[in-house]
Length: 272
Image (cartoon, rainbow, N blue to C red):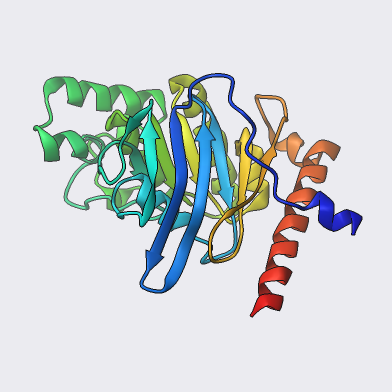
């Protein structure tokens, strides 16, 4: 019984400053199927939050609702205190697939949002060049996607999301299709970009190690209907490196999160 009490859901930590992003009692139903059930989460400006959970727990549904691409059944989404529920374009959104347009160069893909909304200006082009140069792709600005590696394509997709100018970025398993070595390299690269630009990031992953390595907090979602089962404060010092993956603190966090995921899976299985 002691272990089960330790695994009980914990409330999100109270915030000492106004939230950048506020998800309030969000629920999503598809017919009779409840995908998300009363999800509430406060995210501070500049915070990095990882979201973990089993397949089908509603992680992508949550992102689709926050981005305004999916109309929630109930609840609100607030950005800097403004109600942005059901309003697309208020946050940046990057999917696992890079979705690069093969007929556009790296420069053209980075400036895609500007091209589709108001037409890419000289300033947009200069910003694309600045981003690409700053983050290791300056010499590839005129290359097409077929000439890039998987990691390079993901970098371009990230730059495209950054160039859209949104301060809150939703990253839905962006490194899931990469090999282990490239994936770790991209994780380190992402942390550097995040540090440089000060964006607020919500990051969906199935990888517990990845969630811990990247995040300030980890949101563990329960099997469907998706709810927040636990919010874990990571508390590891930054900057983080490969050595952090083998520390006692890292291992203890992983054990705690794995126990939560296993407990939720067993509870969901017993309820069927």
